[in-house]
Length: 298
Ligand SMILES: Cc1cc2nc3c(=O)[nH]c(=O)nc-3n(C[C@H](O)[C@H](O)[C@H](O)COP(=O)(O)OP(=O)(O)OC[C@H]3O[C@@H](n4cnc5c(N)ncnc54)[C@H](O)[C@@H]3O)c2cc1C
Picture 1 (cartoon, rainbow, N blue to C red):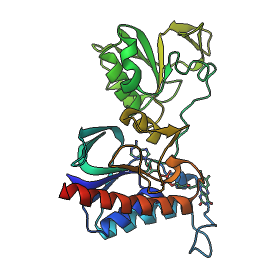
Picture 2 (cartoon, rainbow, N blue to C red):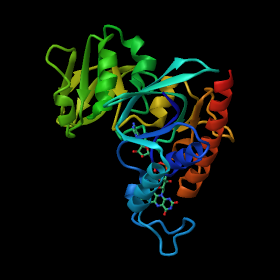
Picture 3 (tube, helix red, strand yellow):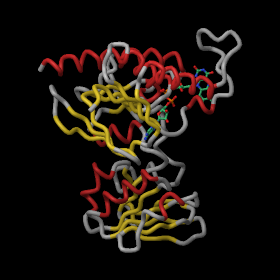
């Protein structure tokens, strides 16, 4: 059990870890996959680098710095977060592709992820069959046919949850590589994989069918989006955190509306730059430290 678990190893998550660890708490960072920094050819506007630094170098340097300070860093994809015990002695649990972790406080620093794919009808049917959260909306699709858009482990997690309720679950990979899913989806489950490219979602007042680029279609009552890895907004929805668009709402201390859960960096919106992620990470780390100290006294 950790005092503070941080999801994300970009500038926000690592800054939070540095401040929390230096307060002598038991801190872990869990991350998997790209930071926005991986796409940045050169960072020229961040303090202290007279000749700039490449984004990937800055990303790796931050992770190294946290490890050198004694932060436990795990490279594994977070697929689920839940509250195991309520505040003041809170316990949050996270599931990853390889293990489970528990902590008193959580910091979500997963960067920004665009939720809405460019598929005709997606926006029009949001709330009318298009959903971004199986835990939140799965219940509405008992004994109905649903589709899950995605080609990674996260899509499988969402599909597995829906398979407990729906009559059938089709994972739509939209023509993308789905090797990660093929061993997981067994013939005896209610799940199937459809690799055709999706063109549009159609219906009258509610989703009725998914149309593919080759003109063929399948009937569907629900269409769940689960692209890539779960992002901050995906977790926020499951935890009942307030959002503003796709960004997690926080106060000036980086506290979300759920006690013990903090957020920082691109996932909270605003200026999408390293300096803001570092600042917010520092604040989130220190606020989480205060929270854990209070929880220990309770
Ligand atoms: C092309 C480009 C150029 C840029 N140039 C600049 C620049 O010149 N100057 C500047 O200041 N900023 C620049 N930026 C922006 C900068 O990279 C971001 O603002 C910064 O990286 C945000 O930090 P973050 O920690 O919030 O998120 P990120 O750095 O994106 O880190 C997110 C972390 O969360 C992890 N994660 C996400 N989901 C999961 C999951 N389900 N399980 C486990 N881990 C997960 C990722 O692996 C990653 O470690 C640029 C961005 C891009 C794309």
